[in-house]
Amino acid sequence: METTADKNITTVLQLSAFTQYFFPFGNFIFPAILWSLKKDQSKFVDFNGRQAINFQLSVLLYTLFLAMVAVPVIVYAVINGIEMNFVTPAKWDFNIQNMAGIVATTGILGLTFLGLKVTEFFLIIYASVKNSNGENFKYPLTINFIK
Image 1 (cartoon, one colour):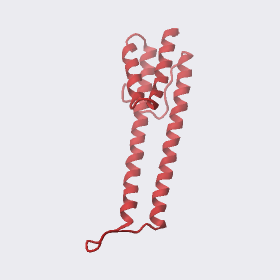
Image 2 (cartoon, rainbow, N blue to C red):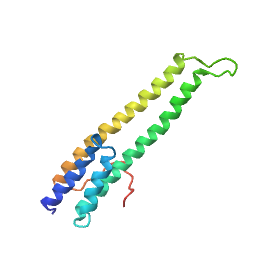
Image 3 (cartoon, rainbow, N blue to C red):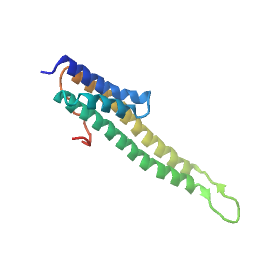
């Protein structure tokens, strides 16, 4: 049975990930501070704090992967539209095929990113509700960086 203080700490710890919308990297800093202050006092806080930090690091990794896929594809589509000739100045030849590649890549990866952020939002809410009820929560598809 978890104490009310532990439940409150883990709930605030989970919800502190929303500070990413107010402070850069707030979703890492604030949960890490709360977790490091209270991890030795409660196994419940330790477990759920590690889960929250691992989840935020996993979301960052997934976002970086999406960017690593998107940037080269978009750069290739833009460069493919430039006619390189060293005698005359470069001409932009943007036709529908070049634009379709940029739009399709941006659209698919943008929707994937949006889905990732919406899923992150609801999973944080769900985890905080579980923690407020005294239940441990393990985020799905999370890489365990901190064991």
